[in-house]
Length: 260
Image (cartoon, helix red, strand yellow):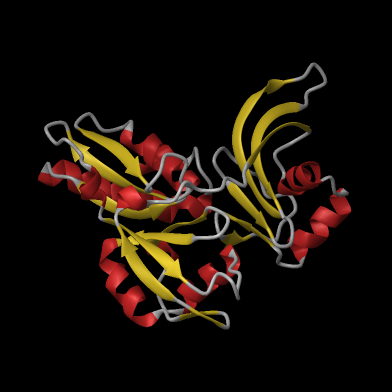
């Protein structure tokens, strides 16, 4: 199955294709549901492409709330009726001295990664402007509750919450419709943040740019649907859709942008 699909994706995405294809095959072989770790939008796009090749397995996603960036995928046979509890998601609320300290997304993510866990078991980190919650795989929650007691210099305590107690996230994404001459990453960054191409190239070459949480060092790197670009000091860009082309050959694209 993989050979035919490889040509539609990047060479560096082959490990993801192989991993997802293996999970689908496991679901087909055992005719039973199989759950992934948290996947980013691009990885879920790949999963959707692969599931189209199966006649017996379907997929559904869950990340705690509808617009979550990171979601777990459940591959399941037709007889199975997925329930929320099948996704094994745990909400943890960060208890910290709100009057005397402030927290930021990067601080929290850094503390989680430095605790020794991998990004795969972490979902979104959300806030309503004051309170903060983490969405994680249930199996890792006891470890985090017992081990994570400080974020930066701030003492914290993680308290388990029901999914029904999830905050209404403060959305930082802004829709944007742009005209770009190509899908090169330097052009997309320049257009999204109103920078010169030279400045965009400088950010890329100085290791300040990631695509789907992997560092990219080539200004001519081609961005595809559902990729997320992280630009240190500027924010994030999600490439949502190509809507068409102008009579001059420029691409009409739909983006979602976070600006710091």
